Amino acid sequence: MHYATAERREHLKHGLTHDPFKALVVPRPIGWITTIGPDGVVNLAPYSFFNAVSDVPPMVMFASSGRKDSLRNIEATGDFTCSIASQDLVDAMNLSSAAVTPDVSEYALAGLAMAPSLVVAPPRVASSPAALECRLWKMVELPGFEGKPGTTVVFGHVVAIFVDERVVKDGLVDTAAMRPLARMGYMDYAVVTPETTFTLNRPRVSDDRRSATVTTGSWDGVYR
Ligand SMILES: Cc1cc2nc3c(=O)[nH]c(=O)nc-3n(C[C@H](O)[C@H](O)[C@H](O)COP(=O)(O)O)c2cc1C
Image 1 (tube, rainbow, N blue to C red):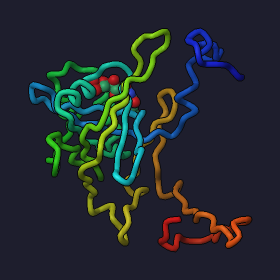
Image 2 (tube, rainbow, N blue to C red):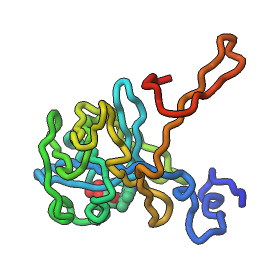
Image 3 (cartoon, rainbow, N blue to C red):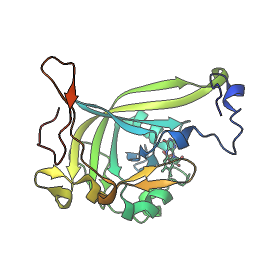
Image 4 (cartoon, helix red, strand yellow):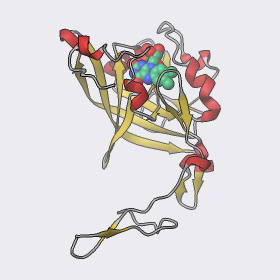
């Protein structure tokens, strides 16, 4: 299979049961976004068009396919938090994606408790092992097919970070211990676990920069 996608009519010609695009760009981290609506209702929803896009300063993005409550709330308030959706919270994460009316808080729907943030107004998921507090930098409207509205990308500065001490080990975040969920294609998910995590040292380039070697074994603690 090999097909063009620039036009809508081409994009639909994959010949498969469903569009394969999201099954190919995997695994996608899940940004579990909390915002506050104009009426004070605390909104929660998962977004897998989500990622870190800068570390100095720390910045994240998520993309809303159409205009949803999270997007509208951030337009109004500028603040959001992003909690890590861990394996033990999978059912709550899934329930929080239900398209309930804006007056219903997905925290109540999913039986989740909130914890206060340090800098921004929206809280975080109390039982989540880590969360990012974010402030809107910019929204970018992506082009849709045939001039129709597409997706809106929300970029935010990370202005505070919460990490549960239980997932800090020897001065490092034990990411695998958080067992973060990731989105695959269709209705599939994956989990990052200690069993599927491995360490790989970066190549060291020779003095003449014409060859490189990789040392095996554990990380020496130097970012290269
Ligand atoms: C794991 C998961 C990932 C999702 N990722 C996205 C996404 O990246 N963009 C999007 O627009 N909707 C995504 N959705 C659907 C939204 O969560 C859903 O439309 C939700 O009702 C939006 O809530 P809101 O209106 O409160 O913002 C995802 C759903 C799930 C379960």
